[in-house]
Image 1 (tube, rainbow over the protein chains, first blue to last red):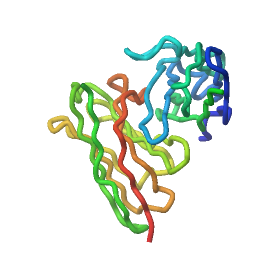
Image 2: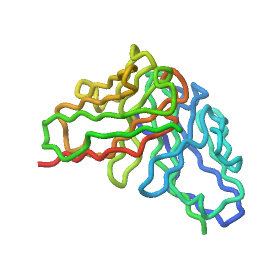
Image 3: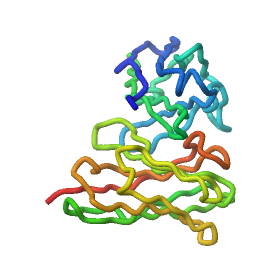
Length: 110
Length: 120
């Protein structure tokens, strides 16, 4: 099964909003409301920031929001801050009862 | 607070075996599904395996099926990954992660990882 498709990079200026897309198929993203997003700073473990498409774990900033339409999920970061510069990965539950990740998106704050 | 501490990584020759461990604390381990996810140096995340809270439902990525075995001990709050027939492409940081629920749905909290290097 191929990885979910994410843009390699997205950039924005402080205060702006950016959106990262994550495209899969009807066997993963489109078939279940079990899409999650992770933020990973260099040398650190991934941190869950959105799960079940739209839910945020306790303590995660409300500047991060998730959505889904068909086979494509999206993560929006509003009010972009310097500390948001990191790699972001999406993931989805699949019809094979596995988890599949996206290739990752490097977010740069200009 | 929730803690996951992986151990057992190291340098191993191709074809050899290695057993990774993950010590869990700060939450009710027996109530959560658990995952192993790996990340090759400079690469993305690859889901490896997961099992349900009671250990009865186990799933593997095709890339490791038949070579890796995931297991858990709910009395010791431990997660394991037994790896045999290791290949160069198995070299990665291996993370254990707690699911957001009792099944296998979404890796939630992650440990800091343990590095496995397969090289002659």
